Length: 525
Image (cartoon, rainbow, N blue to C red; front, side, top):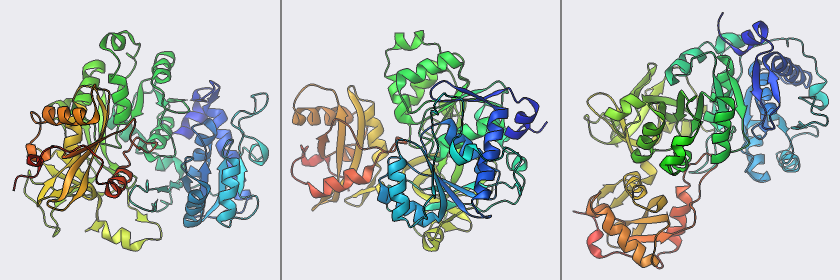
């Protein structure tokens, strides 16, 4: 048997596919019927090959059913971040050309406002009840009334996600439709599962991150193609996650570094008492993970962490825990189908060990930025794409990220990488979060500024002096922040990504109030 969602639905229809956020279980057979209903509903609405369907849905069975229903038709599916305002949602609807928007309470009013602003016709917003009265129906209204028969013209669709927009207006990452049947399109799911160490057939995946993001949705959907049970939580909550792992025997999950920081913050004796022995793999991406956090996770759970580097545009590298322990700080080597290059400002290859812009070509994932050929062209070189990250390769071909090119601080002509300073800060007692940015400086061009979340005694000036002194044993003097600010929390996206631009903009507008260190903290020229 070729493992795929539809094969399991046919051979083992009573197998549990999804455990909804309220504990209701849905089988593979039931989910297949609902996927067919959604597909037939979309054809009945007059959609055609290449059209776009959008969804504004929380983590839910209904979201996963929409994904499955759209995936077996030659359509593009665009999940929308439900934190966005109506005008922001309207922009995505207009830009993508979406014909239908699936939603649910409590987003219906915002969805309808956005659809009207985007010029969608009446009825384009389709509301699905997450908890239907009586609890029996899984899909409601005209979708629930659609035929459960196999839809006509089945062909594999594709997701069209929008970049996070942390550096400007979000752009749709559009991949071509492949023109193959759905089961053939999922043929690489087992190979990917093997790469993450989750190709076991008795798997249980825990979906806890917002599934309008690329990775959380992709892993939950892939889990169904290898016959796994997907347990859904509405959102990240450390205590609820640990309870779910014990209750359901979770074998794998997806985390971002911020979540791992919360987990290892638990006292060691508490961690030792938790029932987490079922975990066989934790996949993590989205942001650089401080080495001390990753090492603590491995010490606690064993070598179960698998890190991937890439973005909405595609994956580039992978590294297992065993590899990472001998290449600390690396994000791995190129995937088998990926070509990796490190280039200087003139787009020439740099020697091993030197920092440059990271370019990669993923042969399985061609794409273009929707409606923006200039951005598409600017990101390419001989078929290779860059996400704007800086990094270096070692002699063994392992990639180490330095920072994003846009985040680089150039102080007195010296390149300073914020991520290195942030990792050093996060190793200091009482520091729970940190962001380092460049601050306009008349003498140096830019100086290093740190915004820190810390639970330490003393005034802000005293804390700044103490942190600066402690950093001197960890990083070079010219990297020590010259100015400091302290906050209760830092702005982050729902995927855990630091919204560095917001901090940089606030620093540019406010140059006088932060505590300063002495002038010797400037660059070494």
